[in-house]
Amino acid sequence: MRAIDLMTKQVLTVQPQTPIREAAKLLSDNGFTALPVVDDTGTIVGVVTEADLIRDRIPADARSLLTGHNHEEPTCPTTVGDAMTAPAVTVNPGTDVAELVKLLLRRHLRSVPVVDGDRLVGVVTRGDIVRCLARPDEAIADDVRRRLAICSEPGRWQVEVQRGRVMLYDSREDPVHAHVAKIVALGIRGVERVTVVPATAREADRSAAIGTNVPRISVGRL
Image (cartoon, rainbow, N blue to C red; front, top):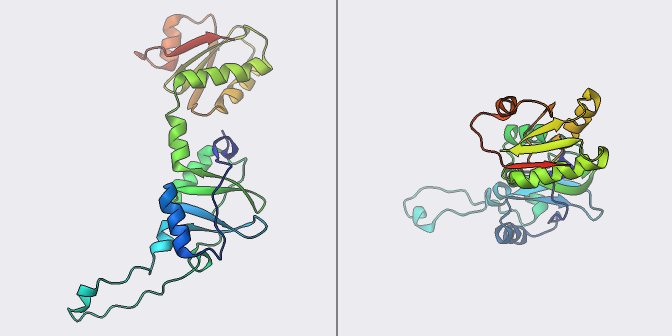
């Protein structure tokens, strides 16, 4: 699965000259944690986050001034360009989602812009990935069947999905086609693992391959 398979393509953006309060309202109203910053040509020039907006902006409580403590006045940037983080950490549409997750965790990011060259084409958030993991098995199985129907003859595969793990039962036992089918299935949103076994495998072997004592969720034939 790649970034292009998960990303949101209609992205809310701001520009460097956007006032801080306007950017803060956009974040607040939409429940976002960050906004890509683009110039007039759509080229990404940075990212503005909640942390960027609140840094050095909130003055000390007036009551604390009565204690005699000295407090520095906040610098109060007025535009996004004064507060944004630049350059932005980005990925391209073909980035493997597994690598994207590592990047999010390593850099403590909640979202990452997707760019084609320097041009913004989408955004992937942690929430997008969590929703992918929460996808129902039935929906995953339907997508796997549809994709395999494009590249295989009718009746070739049986598809079973349990907790995001896909079992492909191969009626032809062709290792080359099995490899292709596995790659196709791994590109489906919500798939965590794909196993290919002969359609003649015993029921006990099937259960052992996908996990014991796990009820079947969705079974169908293409």
